[in-house]
Length: 563
Image 1 (cartoon, rainbow, N blue to C red):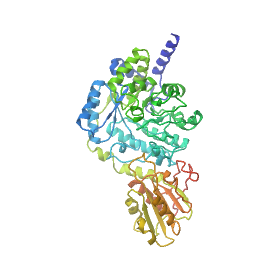
Image 2: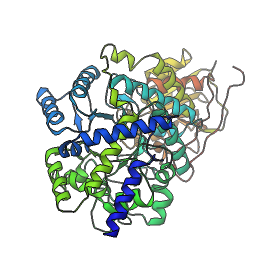
Image 3: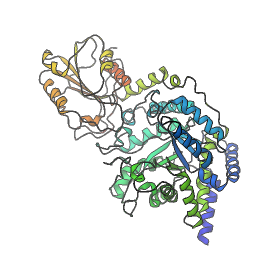
Image 4: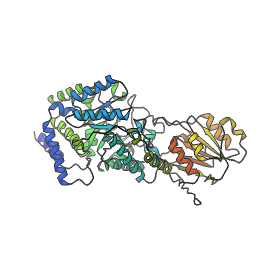
C-alpha cells in the first residue's frame, strides 16, 4: 500500500511540475506554463477512456496507394480517435488537404510527423534535398546545421507537420551497417552529440519537435531492422561509452522525443530475443528511471520486420506501451491495441496512472507546439515553396563546408587556368560537375585513358548512386584498376562523390590529391567544382573511421589566397 502511495505521489509531482527534459517553447513565461497545464488538465478530463487510449497511437498516411487506403485511415482517425499521423510518400498538396480535413474532424489536434532527416525530400520527391547526416558530420561550423534544420522546420510548418523524427544519434562504427550509414553524423561520439544538438535546436527553436533515435543505439548492426531483428552484443562498458553516450548527453537539453529501436541488446535485456522497443528493462528501467528522461518516448515503426514478424498487430502495441513507450508509431492494429491495453489495466498489469502520464505528456507537447489552435494550410504553390533558390543556396553552402581534403601532396589546387582531364567512374551521373568546371576540362571515358598525355592533371571522379542513404558503398574492381593505372604517369586528383567508406579498400598511396564530397547530386557537384577552382574554402573533417590510415578528424584546410 505504501509503495502505491509513493508511486501515485511521484506521478502527481511528475505531471504537475515543469519537466526539464520536456520540450518547451523558448522564453516561455510562468503564466504560459500555467495556461498549458490548465489546458492539459481540462482536456484530459474531457476525454473518454477510449479517447485517452487513442492518443497513444500514430498511424501512417500514404496518399499514393489509392482511395481505399485513404478511406481506411479516415476511418481510423474518425473511429479510433488516434493521436497522430506520420506522412509517407506522395504528393504534398494532397497530403495538406487530408491533414486539414483530419485536423478539422479531430476532437484533439493530431500530431503530424514525418521522417525528414534530410528534409521533406525524404518523403516528398518535389522538395529540395538537404545533405545526409554523415555529410553534416564533416562540417566544422555546427551553426550551419542549425540553419539547415531551421529551414526544414519552415518547410514542415508549410505542410502542417509538427514532428520531424530526427536526428539520428547512432554512432556508426560499422562501415557495413545496412540501415544507418549515411544517416549517422559519424563514428566519433562528441561530433555526433554536437551535430545532433545543433540539428535539434534548429527544429525546436522553430516550434517543430525533434526525436533523437534509435535508442539504445543502432550504429553497430549488420542486420536491417526493417527486415529482421538486429543484435547489438557489446558489453555494458562499451554501450555506455559509445552507443548510449549521445542519448545520455542530450537527455537534459530539452529534446522532446526519443525513438526506441527494434534491437536485441543482451547486456540491457536478459530475456532472449526481446527487442528494445518492447523491453521494460530498457525503456522504463534505463531510459526513464536511470537516465531520467521525461520527454515523449515513441517506438520505431511497428510495421518493421524486426517486430512485425514476431508479434501480432495490437499485441505488439500493448507490449510496447507496457514496456514504457508513450506512443506507438506506425501502428498496424489500433483497435486491438486499445483493447489489450485496457485489458492490461483491468488485470492490474499496468496502471491507469501510466495512461494519464503518457496522455498528459502528449497533450502538453501538443499545446506547446501550438496545436490547440490549428490553422489550416494552403496547398497552393507548395512544390515551389519546398524547392526554391533559398533552399539551393543553403544546401550548396552546406556541401561546400563539408568537402574534405585528405591529401594534397603536389599542391595541384586550385585548378583555375590549367588544362584538366576528367575520368568519371562508377554508376551515377557526373555531367553537372564537368559543366561547372568549365571549358578547360576534357572528359575521357575509362577506355580512353591511354590517350591522356603523361604528367597531365587528371581528376578521377567516383560518382556513387545517391538514390538511397542506406546503401553501403563499394568501388568496383575495374575502377580501382583504372585509378592505379593513372597514378603511374599522371598527377591524379581523386574525388569521391559518395561516402568516405568508399575509400576503405582503395590504395591512395600514389594518389597525390584526395577529396571526399560525400554525395553525388547537382548541389554537391556544383559546390565541389567551386572548391576545386578555388572559389570557396575547403575545411571539412572526416566524420568516420575509414581504415588504419584514414581516421576520424582528418582533413587539410585549403583556401585560394589569390582569388
